[in-house]
Amino acid sequence: MKLTPDSEKYQTLYFEAWTKQNKIDGRKNPDMLKKDTKKAWDNGKVNGALGGRKKITLDKWPEKAKIINNMKLKGMSNNKITELTGINLSSVKDFVKRYDLPKEV
Image 1 (cartoon, rainbow, N blue to C red):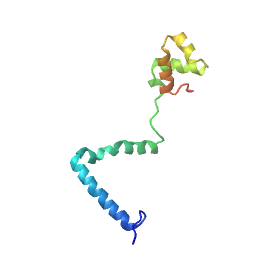
Image 2 (cartoon, rainbow, N blue to C red):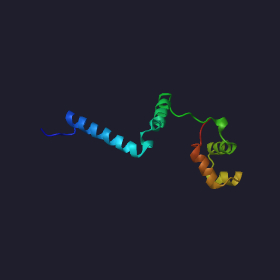
Image 3 (cartoon, rainbow, N blue to C red):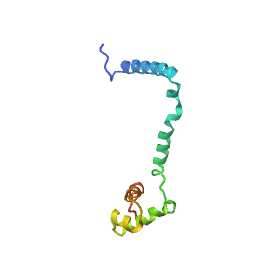
Image 4 (tube, helix red, strand yellow):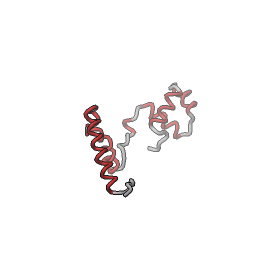
């Protein structure tokens, strides 16, 4: 009988070999077997069930981000915002990217 990856016997042999190798690797590197590595994944499932990651509200935004958002809503370019506010162009671009501006609030 030829063993193929979809056969039951192959899968049980593979699973046994895999668990045996995990035990050997775990003795060499105990950090590998820690169960806390799944915590981030589990938190993702919880937040996904609740509708996604918690949103940052406007009142928690920095004052500069609020100003840039208002100017972007009025159709101003990054260069124009830099001229009027005195904020560096790279900072304006960072705020636009970080807070996904402009946003209707």
